[in-house]
Image (cartoon, rainbow, N blue to C red):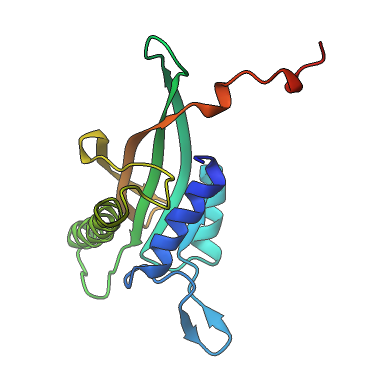
Amino acid sequence: MSNFQDRTNYFKTIATKNKLVAHSAVIAEGQTRFSFHRINDEAELNSACVNWAHFPCMVHIGNNINYRQNGTGLPMKMIGNHLYFLTTLDSTTHPFKSDAIQAAYEDAEKVMDQAIAYMIEDVAENGTCGNNLFMFDMNRAKADMIGPINEVLYGWYLVFIDEAPGYTFKYNANDWNI
C-alpha cells in the first residue's frame, strides 16, 4: 500500500489534525477552512490561493518513484514525497516587505516542523506512518525555501524519500493474454 491517493489522505490527516493548518475546521457558521490541497500543477495552486484557500496551508504536490534492485527478489520502490508548506505575507503586522517575508518563512517552517514531528511520532508509536503506508526517515528529507508564489505566498518545499517493497512487480500470469 503506497499509492498516491493513500499518501494524499495521510497528509490531509496531518493537515486536519494540526492546529495551525486546521484543515476543515469551522471558521464561521456554514464555513470551514480549506487549507490542505492536492495540486496537479502550479496554475491550479495559484487559482486555489487566490480564490478559496486559507493559510497557513499544506500542499501535496505529488510523488516521484525511483527503483532499486537488491540482487534477488522483487525490486524496491523509492518514493519521493513532495509537500509545500505556505503562508501569506502579513503586511499589517510587518509593514516592511522584507520583515513580512521573513515572518512568512518562519511561520511556514513551524508548520513543516510540526508535520515532520507528527510523522516521527507516528513511526515511534506504530512502526510506520499511516498504518504501513511508509517509513519516514529524516536522513532522506530535505527542505528548500520557496516563494514568492502568486506574489504573496512564501514557505518551504519538503521532499522526503521512503522505500516500499515493489509487490506490484510480482509477475501474475492472469494479467496477460497468453
